Length: 197
Image (cartoon, rainbow, N blue to C red; front, side, top):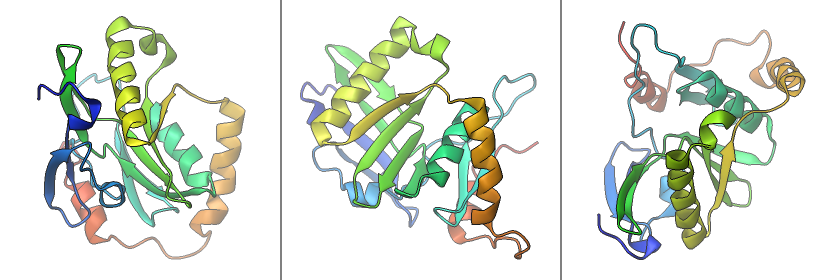
């Protein structure tokens, strides 16, 4: 975990077949990681401030977990974006040294476009993004992404009218009047991440 070079940072993820992978950022197979399963279980407790759940994605044809309503909003935008080819939630853990400070961080989303270009996304309310500890983690994550040639985005929200319009138009992509989506093995794996009440 004491990486000085960003490319020596440890990366852990679970591939689409459910196999746990531990590697370095230098050796990370981006194509394999792009369809990673979530590395975190969704948590639930009394009086929690965030609402987690599963989002049915027309892009992936399966459920994508989210950990907050703000993250759900980002999923609506990604799913509606015709250039987004795949969406992975909580795709990996980064672990390593940042100027002597040991850090561990799991970004919220990994979006892959139709050209294979990937964007790591952290979703955080604007008031939290300003906190020094959050800024330090996001700055470190940005450097990791830059070293690997991956885009990085910190997302704090969008215009509510735009989101409402996208949610309305999304009905057409989901197939009005068609039968309900079937559960795939990936969906079953994601459902196992949901908290039990």
